[in-house]
Length: 443
Image 1 (tube, rainbow, N blue to C red):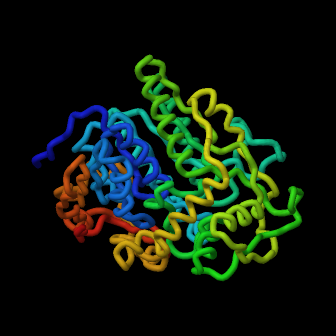
Image 2 (cartoon, rainbow, N blue to C red; image 1 turned 90 degrees about the vertical axis):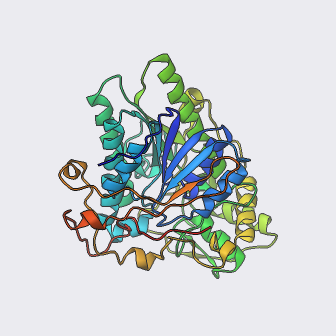
């Protein structure tokens, strides 16, 4: 078989899930530093439009090539690795709804854990051992006190989503230990990302009912939902409502750039970091009522809310101690709570229906939650299997957004030639979208 041409640019960064909320904001920051990016995303909860806008926001700096590939599709994933020589990988791709993870845990373990294993095995195979993992403060489980949480606090996630993050972290620790002095792995434990880019061009565009507080608040403010439910008002906090650490999405994106710079410096010094975790949070706790009142200021009117029963497992206060990131990465959150709410409101008013506002319909390739859950068959994903399975020609959707060029597309990879010989699993419900489709998108 003729292999596709492989770029030997050693400064190419792989970004999985780069079209999503956190990924797209990080892409802006990386492009602004003239980075060369290859982005893979299956668009199950994101839009290609975010990448077009990210390029605009970066003033056409850097370069970006997009492949519509699912990390569970090991065949298509390896074709991407065959084309580029990656210097590092920032791994955002995965499912992230806590409630949904309890309803369909198999889908979450399959997508998050097995998908990450696919990426890691290919990084190892193609000799790229610089890896930044999008983790979560959910790995800490129930805090043992109201004190800010340090990275050495006990872990013990309380739901399937959190456990996927915790298990992946443990796998990455083991991988780094198995090859001493070779891996640079940074685990970034996010607290509560909110806000949007100050331009209002990119922001969070969740499918269905938002799982997090602030996207829900924004939808109430724009009139898409009637009222905000405040879960419990009898916590041991200043106003009785739960206190959390919120971080502006742009600050969070800059944390990834800081982690990448840290890895670059360690590679230059030939002193690998192994595997290390950092909290990315503001270090400041805001209550639910703080968030509602501050958003009301951004909107210019009081937002409706009602107190409802506590949710099982909720705790009063969860705040990060981000001092290690400040010391090691030279990073700290800079934007205020009012910045978070003002920027979120700007995004919401300019895009009342998310990215669909731009074209009057759903974003290409972005199914509804119902259609995501109707998938009956997932692709085989374990990489040792693919050595014995015929490989189909690689024809991914490619969005080439190099500087000063118009987007160009080629037809996507079709798994049909190999699917008949590949065993599959069939959970009754799963949000995973399965193999890449063969429908090209026209811009």
